Each structure stands twice: as C-alpha cells, then as structure tokens.
Length: 472
Image 1 (cartoon, rainbow, N blue to C red):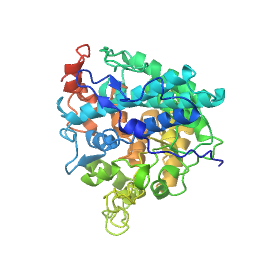
Image 2: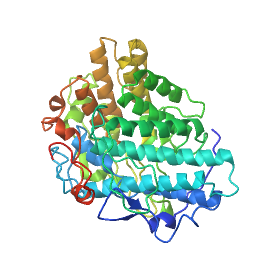
Image 3: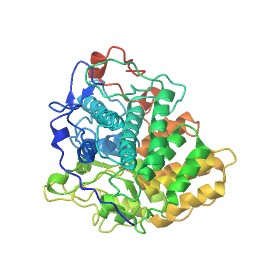
Image 4: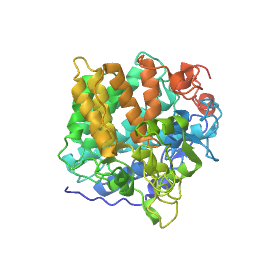
C-alpha cells in the first residue's frame, strides 16, 4: 500500500493551550498567546494545528475511557484505583465525578480546535495551499469534530432515541469568548455528525497512515452512525464499501497481530499514533487495573465445545482464542491484558486506542443487513462468520432473525472487549429496539436512566441552560 507519510510533531501549540474556564465548561479557548492573525499562515502551520488536534485525542482525560465503558457494560470490572472509576462497575456514577468533567471538556477542546482550523482554512489564511490539500485538511478536522460530537452524544445524551431532546451542545464555531448554549436534540446532533462525515468521506485523503483520519475512516464511522440512526440500508452498503476497499486494509490473519502491530495493523482504519519519547502515549496501560467479567468469561467458554473446564494457565485452553490472547498467562503480558502489551515507559511503544478497525465493520455490516428492509440473512451470516473463522471458533448456522441479531451482539463482545465500549452501546441499542432487556445482561441496570451518564455537575453550574439527564 502506498503511503503518504506525514511526520507528527510534538506540538507546543496545543500543549500550552486548551484552558478550561470554570464558568462554562462547554466553551474552550484553545490558544493563549496565539491568535487568529498569526497561527495559520501556510500549509505547514495549518498542519501543526491539525497535528495538535490529533494530539488532544491522546490526552489523559480522553484516552482510556474505554476501560470505564467496559466496566459500565458487561465486558469487565475495574479492580484497582482508576481516575473517575467510582460507580462504573455498578452503573451508579455520581454527578460530581470530576473525571467526567475532564472527559467532557476534553472532547470540546478537540471540537474547538477543529472549528478553529476549519475557520482559518475556509478564510484562506493558509497562503499557497492547494485547493485539494485544503479540502483534505478540512475533511480531517470535520472527521475529528464529528467523532468528538459522536462520543459526547453516546456518553451524555440519549443517542439511541432520535426523538429525544436530550442530545448535547453542538459547537461548530471557534470560541474566543464564553457563550452558554442549551443542548441540541439528538436528531440535530446526528445531522451535524452526518454532514461532517459525508464531507470527509468525499474529500478526505486516501492511502495515508492509519493514525490519520482519511476518507476510509470517515466512511467507516459514517456506517456506524447510520446503524445507530436506523439507516440500515445505507449502513450495510457503506460498511461493504469499507470492507472491499482498495487501500490495502484487510483482516489480519492472526487476531494477535492486531495488537502486536498496533496502529500499523492491516485492519486498523484509525488509531492514534503512539511511540517512545516525544511521540506521546495514551493511558491504556491502565487496563492493568481491570479484569474480565463473568459474562465475558462464560461467553468465551461457550465458544469451545469441550466438556472440560477451561484454564488460563500457560497458553490456556477451553476458551475463545481471543479471550485467551488477552488473559492467558503466556500472553496477558505485564498489563494483564494481551491487547495492550506495551508499558508506559519513555522507551516503550505505548498502547494505542482502536477507534475503528475492520473487524467491527464486518459486524456492522452483519447487523445492518439483518435489520434493513428486505435484508439477506445469508449475507449477514457470512459477514459474522468471517470474524469467527479468523478467530478460530466454530462457524454459526442460520436459524432466525432474532437469533442472528443476538449472535452478532455477542460476537462484538468477543471481538472488541476492552477496545472502544461498543458492547455497552449495543446493550443500550438492543434494549431500545426491543431485542433484549438490559437488566438480563447486567443486573445492576435497573432503569433506562442509567443508559446515559450524568452531565457533570460543574457543567450544570457553569451553563445554566443545560438540562441534567433524567434520574440525576
């Protein structure tokens, strides 16, 4: 695959910036000494701003939240001290959890940085940049803005209900002063996300490194958004387009290679670059403070048709190979989970975040195909079994629609546990769509109010126009 290499710099531009102002946590002024007059001057300076946006995605406050989501759902448990972990195991997260404040504002920092770059590029501040390059950089910024809005909506809004007024605050203009804004409706948030991703799909760069968000990443994320919004025909078609890409992205032949190869894996569509010294790292090494859930262990055990009990000693046996790779003694590595084998040391590669990879897209295609009007269950089964075949477990047989949907949900849990929280969002979506009862999957899910985390108390204090989520 031809790669157009772009070196990521350590960007002091954003390191000294991103100041949170307590009176309104939504509005983030991302520059202290830099101004709209002198920041973006040409292509090189614009690239520095864009690199700064990418770097914000690796900040501590946003870079290991999948571990919290794993505990909030049915993937695992938080077993040691972890910032902001109170209540996640039992689905009783308090509104004064300061980590949620930082998570919330961290995503708005990303959004505001994107808004700044889009504003400056559209105002022709980058002298000498080609129209194609400008469109590509705007598309990368729009992808990042869409992804941050999507995450905020899934964390703090009723993302599963298109008729809900409990969305999040949409920000599409660079903030240089504080402005309190009320929450947008869920449908309004999704419309902004879709608009950004449609642009990014059409204009994003191609044949780029996996740690940049190009056209293919935009299509992959848009397929997931379409799945969430009930546009199942569009989701299935776009997922199929991503799977059959011509950029060289294919499933790894060995599941373990995904994590050994990190962001350079052949199936990783978008994951932050990590590396030694000044390349920066995420905080995913904190996976050492977690463990698997009984639900995950039981499901992994059910994939192997033996009468003997499974074991995690040595290379392990009697469990799904993906579970064994993560937790068998021989492969779990120092962090206690083989998916994140690198230590948090200066000379270490560092663990990335698997935001989007082909394994998930196969399962998005499968679910969308089942749910769409006139969908072909055989095609959906083939997509599901492509993942099971790579994993080395028995293929599923076709029975009925309900069973196939449940098989797909469980396969996501087996394939993606402790990666991006997708199995938690599946529990919520499946409950809302009438495919299961959340309490049957996790006993502590006693109310639909728990499907959404509380808007942080500091946000409510700072922005009087923001209404708290139900039940908090």
